[in-house]
Image (cartoon, rainbow, N blue to C red; front, side, top):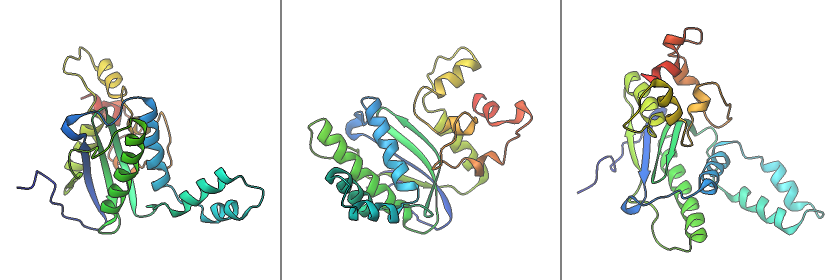
Length: 218
């Protein structure tokens, strides 16, 4: 019997909650480098690929072989600029969550398979292991209402929360304790490949009681 949300309905121009966790609930991130590498892969896949520059590096007689090799790898790498928009994410030690909008029907599947394979290769090489990193194939839930869309951003950003929080100050601090897109939503950071704008249109920029920070703390 298929596990929950493993059977997916793919639609173009639609929002999806994507998530997965480590095999046997084991960690998929052990240290800061692991998080940084995973985020760098997201950046590479989601930002436009400068094919002209990469080809110039490859054909440049003064470029070193390492630089040429890296340029060749990037040139061959899949790219999802214009196909995938990442609205929100959070990375936990043994799992991750994405909120994604895809343009074409199968963009998410190609994107997630590319990301999973590449990160698994890095992780297995670094930790001298073999086999699957994730418990199963990623799960995908189609978002079918504005209420669900807003709830998901809160759910994703509040993932790091502990169960024993004494004040609202602790809520925000705990939410920010793991890598996530929450700083983009709070105006603390701007990242080209993270797109909070669709969500932030629902919130006030002037009234603190109606802004996104208040929404998260509630």
